[in-house]
Amino acid sequence: MTGFFDALKAFEPRKIKKPVVVIDGKKVEVDVEMFKQVQQHGAENFKLVDGVVKRIPPKRYKKTYFILQKADEGYTLHNHDPYWPENYGRGGFEWQTESE
Image (spheres, rainbow, N blue to C red):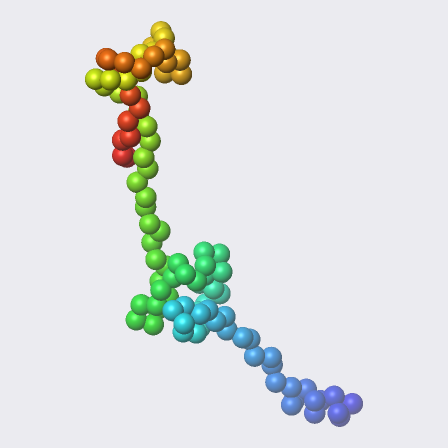
């Protein structure tokens, strides 16, 4: 039984490994929550600012879509139905792009 107590005295607790992420080619130790965010969004969406890992805001793109507008030359519509053009000529409607 003395061997058991000697082994218990010599027992060292296991060291918990800190999470490490690679950002901009550098290894940085972070907390568990930041590690989860980097794993979820990808390391390319984060940058190192003054030794602190920060997320790059996502790019916002303008949406473009087509709107049916009156034009000098365009489609004449049957019963004003945009899905039933009759012919192309003067005084009709034209699909034109408009930005958000």
